[in-house]
Image 1 (cartoon, helix red, strand yellow):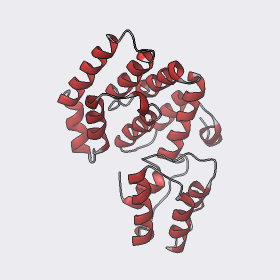
Image 2 (cartoon, rainbow, N blue to C red; image 1 turned 180 degrees about the horizontal axis):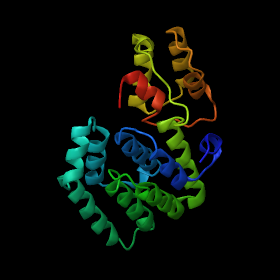
Image 3 (cartoon, rainbow, N blue to C red; image 1 turned 120 degrees about the horizontal axis):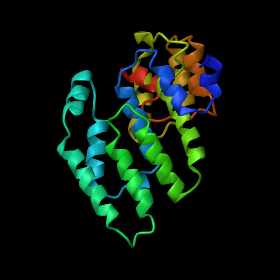
Length: 221
């Protein structure tokens, strides 16, 4: 895969394969999975699924991630039970979509495309075509991983009270409409990185929790 293909091509499998050639925190893939799940959040109505998602959202550090991978948690068993109950809802017209969404939650800690695929399946049974949904997930990968062909060095001097406040507000609210404002604040702090500023100001770029620029400002892995 070339840099141009990474920036424009919509194929998750090849993008994931390309990421194996670079060193990234494994937490980033969980953030990708969580971004995919946000697309079907309306279908997830079981508190046990929400508990597991909350646990994943709070993850930080390699130790926590390693512990999560070692053995199934109580929350995971809860999600499995929820899926079993969904199978028995014969009178629910959205049963198939809800099962796929719950299965997406169950696989969200794995470094595979299973979550993305389950979300695409859920959307296909709920709203529109699976292919279109899969392509939208490629935008999440670009937002979370940036451009692996062009690594960016982030200066701590750009992490000011203003930039941190803007980034934290967007992260907590999941509303990334202030990305251009963040670009202005980072630039005022001395940032001259075209990649960072362009990512923030690109009107076509989708932003999610895990956006590489926001995470850099907040000091996340």
